[in-house]
Length: 72
Image 1 (tube, one colour):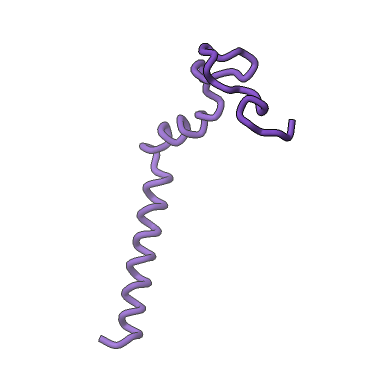
Image 2 (image 1 turned 45 degrees about the horizontal axis):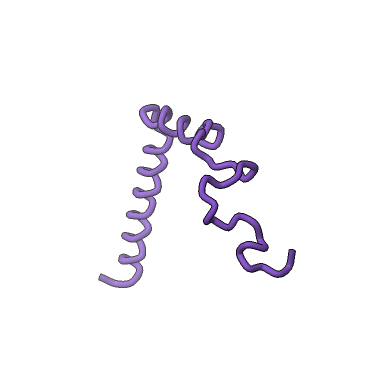
């Protein structure tokens, strides 16, 4: 097998892989999953901590000064 044949086979395999991935991504069966993933940034997340509320325990340093940063 010479170099040209090898390159041709690799190109054919890559084209088939590209077409397969494209067919998979645009299939109607995958559409609901992709729509759900597209809306994830807009989902409400009630578990995120707010920086406005004080910490539950007094041991945690929340300000720059308490962590040792002198540039306050």
